[in-house]
Image (cartoon, rainbow, N blue to C red; front, top):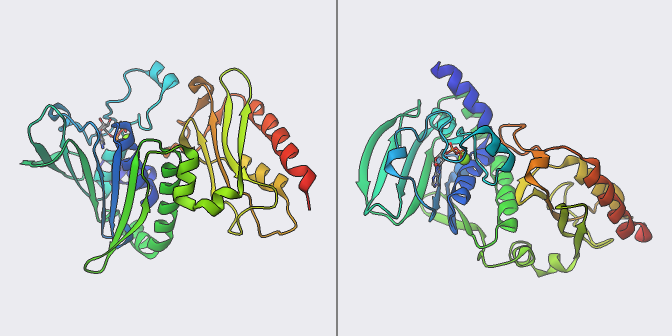
Amino acid sequence: RAVIHRICSGQVILDLPSAVKELVENSLDAGATNIEISLKEHGEESFKVIDNGCGISPENFQALALKHHTSKIADFSDLQSLTTFGFRGEALSSLCALCNLTIETRTKNEPVGTHLTFDHSGLVRAETKTARQVGTTVTVEKLFSTLPVRSKEFKRNIRREYGKLISLLNAYALIAKGVRLLCANTTGKNMKSVVLKTQGTGSLKDNIITIFGLNTFRCLEPLTLGLSEGLKVEGFISKPGQGSGRTLGDRQFFYVNGRPVDMPKVGKLLNELYKCSNAKQYPVSIIDFIIPTASYDVNVTPDKRKIFFADEGCIMLPLREALEKMYSPHQC
Ligand code: ADP
Ligand code: MG
C-alpha cells in the first residue's frame, strides 16, 4: 500500500512547479498576505514556503497529512461554489510520500508555534514547541527521494523545472492583489538571489509593471469584455504589432476567476489572430475569465490546471470577435 501511495502521489506532485504551487495555494487559501518561497539549489536540495496566514490548529495536526484530509470542503454540493484553490486534501499527503516534510505553524489562539515532522505515510513523527509568528512554514527536503528513478530525472531537469516554476510564480504574482510574494534561491554556501518580489499593493496593471516593467506594459492594451450575465473577460494583451519576441506561450497567462489555468485553445486563437509580419513575435496576454463557479469544473486533472467549461462557445466566440476587431485592421 505504501508503494501504491507513493506512485499515486507522484501523479499529484509531478515536478518542482506542481509541488511549490500546492504550497503557495495553501498559503493563499489560508488568507496569507505575505508569502515567501525560499529554494536551496533551485529546489533540488530543499524548498520552503513561509506564510502569515491563519495557521493550523492543533486538533488538525494528526490528520493534516493524511490522504483526503481537507478543512475546505464539507459536502459535495460545496464543489459547485468553490472559491479556495485546494479541496481534495491530497497535496500534503502526497508530498509526505515523496520527501521529508516538516511544518511549523501557529494560529492566533496559540501562544507558541509547533514544529511537526511527518513520516512517509503522513503520520506525525515528532511534535515540538517553537517560537514563531502566526502563520505556517512548510519545508520540503529532497523531493522525490522515495522514488529513485523520478529523483534522478528531477535532478537532471532541475534547471528546466526551476524555469517553469518561476513562470508559474509569475502567474500567481500577476493576479494576486494584496499579497506580497517573494521568491529567493540560494546556491553554494550562501549566494542568495531574489528572483521575484512584488509589493502586493497593486492592481493587475501595477503587478504587470512590477514584474515585467513599464516598457512591456506600454505595449499592452486593456481587454475588457462583458459577455453574458455574470461572465466577463478582463486583462491586457499586446497592441497590434507589439508582441514579445520570445518563445511561443511565454508571457501568456490565463486565469479563471483568478485561478491560473492552461488554456491552449485561447492561446492558439490569440496567436492565430495576432499574425504579424514578424513571425517571431507573439502576443503577450494576461487574461482573467470571470465566470460563475457553477459553469466550470476544475476537478478534471489533479493539478487543476485544466478547465472544463459547461459552454465553451459562449466564451470563445465573443473573444474571437473582439480579437479580430482589434487585430485584423493591422494585419501585416
Ligand atoms: P487541500 O488544500 O486540498 O485542503 P492539502 O493537502 O493541500 O489539502 O492541505 C491539507 C490541509 O492542511 C488544508 O485543508 C488546510 O487545513 C491545512 N493547511 C495546509 N497548508 C496550510 C497553510 N499554509 N496554512 C494553513 N493551513 C494549511
Ligand atoms: Mg492544498
